[in-house]
Amino acid sequence: MTFGTTIDEAVAPLILALDVGSTGTRGGLYDARGLPVKGARLKVPHAFTTAADGTSTIDADQVADELRACIDYCATRFEVPIAGVALDTFASSLVGVDADDQAITPAFTYADSRCAPQVSYLRSTLDEDETQQRTGTRQHPSYLPARFLWLKEHHADAFARARRWVSIGEYAWLRLLGTTAAGTSTAAWTGMLNRHTCTWDEPLAAAVGVPVEKLSPIAHPSQPLTPAVDIARTWPTLADAVWFAPVSDGHTQSLGAGATDSSQLVLSAATSGALRRIVTGAIDDLPRGLWCYRIDEDRSILGGAINDVGRAMTWLEETLKLPEPEVLAEYLAAEPLPDLPLVLPWFTGERSTGWIGDARAVLSGVSAATTPSELYRGTVEGVALSYQRMLTELLRVAGPPAEIIGTGRVSLEHPGLLQVIADVTGAPVTPVTIKRSTLHGTALHALDVLAPGVARADVTRAETLAPRRERAGYYRRQVERFQILYDKVYAPAR
Image (cartoon, rainbow, N blue to C red; front, side, top):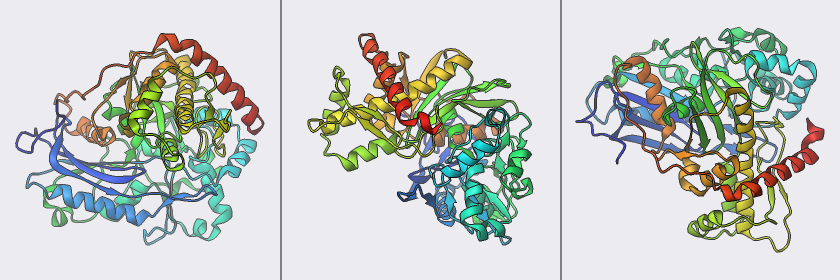
């Protein structure tokens, strides 16, 4: 079944959804059922600027221009009114803006690990457990507190000049709308939101020398923005559109995969990966290995993350002489090998569950006889074992879910990955087969406000992948070996 609709069959109201991801900026039209409108979708590719010292940035004005191009394309495909515009972006980004609302720094991404030394400093000066209970996050290079301290030390002029600090989505809206705000989940993913009050955490802001007045107002989904420019003049079909504050891609990917409540656990496998569960009300005792992000007035997302899933696959493809994809798929499906290399797959640092931001990948048990296929499978198993660590923490605090939904680009490009994850975790995984689930979720985010009474179309799914019980013993041993190697390599860093 095709997941989509034509403009003639689309059910009003229409939503223009926008997504700024790690590999590009996307835009597309969706109808009130959450179905993508055929012929109204555009992607503008981009890449982060990276370096061996942990740099991971992108030009903020470039992204704003990419979003403008997506809006230009999608808003002019059909002469029909568009009721709302919603934007998600990769989480934990940061841009410094001067008094003229111009970017004076690049956009730092979640993967920029140069502030790892500042994480160590914060851990030595803060009560990290107590801070986590307030903000929902541990101290880590992917969050903003350490990044602010790094900027203060290494870019003092820009730190002093900045009139405000915003995410990449907030900056784009400032450029395009003349106004901005941080969506609730965008604020939460900074590591600086008090998850109980939904306000910026003043003790943490003071600790890093950033007054909360330099951060954007926080806007729930029910609090849209009012553009300060004449939108109708540039985009007539958007004359009456409601513009939503930018939100995190982790938030909208959960929605786009079909999660509606705490009965479902979403397993994301894209450039990075995550396990996420929507919960209502407070999580009073948050485990150290997890985070908890507010997304609206009464809901949060509980979970954990891994920096390198698609990035690990890309490293394998670019570094090794791998066989054809069909051969690799067969190799993943074959019986495990007892002497397979053991891989800690953190090419850009560990997030959940140990939060060692400057961790790097470890390949153990590699010999002269090790083949590229064995390294491939060892890395895939390492990724799966990382998900297993997060799942164990989630089960302790939230109990078993009714189902696990698998989504993300890498889950489609490497279908064997989800089967290995099912085998390692012992939990069935149902793949979602629609593409661009994050963009789909961004549309649903707006539709929950603008068309709450319209039934949403069910996302398409593949057959559920049941764990192969005959491999349970092998993976129990791999879990133990993984933990032993982790403790030997990284215990001194904690």
